Amino acid sequence: MIADRKHLTIREWSEDDRPREKMAKKGQHSLSDAELLAILIGSGNKEESAVELSRRILRECKDNLNELARLSIHELCKRFKGIGEAKAITIMAALELGKRRKMNEIIERQKIGSSSDLYNLFEPVLVDLVHEEFWIALLDGANKVIITKCLTLGGQQQTIVDLPLLLKLALEKSALAVAVAHNHPSGQDEPSREDEQITRRIKQGCEAVGIRFLDHIIIARGKYYSFADEGKI
Image (cartoon, rainbow, N blue to C red):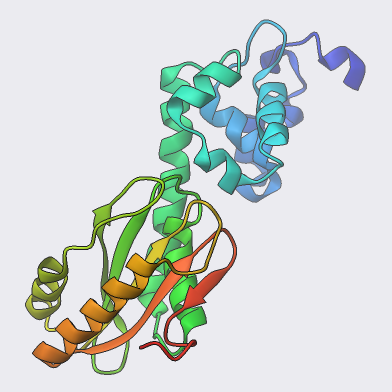
């Protein structure tokens, strides 16, 4: 039966095997990643159903949704027959919503007590980027997160940090503590000379306006470097 299924469209499958019907009957948790992706793209190509195409996409991304999120719209369209711009945008939008949901859930309950707390806060938004971003977390007197914000975007090598903007935002939000993070798309978690320089500048700026500077972490694909843990704050 499974062998014959290759020649059938999803509409010709038994109702229990169709992703949309399966979700309606059994809930979204019953679906595999490939089946969820198939619902997003809607249709496959002449050789593959939407589910088969989705399985191949995930297989080429090592069955890792973070790897999928690193692909650009152009790369999705170029590498996978049956994925046009509209489908690629739909995939990227769904992944971004998932990322934002995870970020919001963490912020709602987050109190920063260690570098690992900071890593858990920023990892969802930084883990799959192919360019550098520099983020700030503003905290109250109990080290609970008030807000997180992306300050600057950079290239694959380095991003420039606007220190006056960072301090202005902290003062506007009445933050009593600040922590920052940026990513290294290369996967190298050791700080550069520029990273060390901006860390010193942020520390000096925070001291000048009476705000505690908790840490600066560098996130690099599953690992991180903490200036505070290394005694450099």
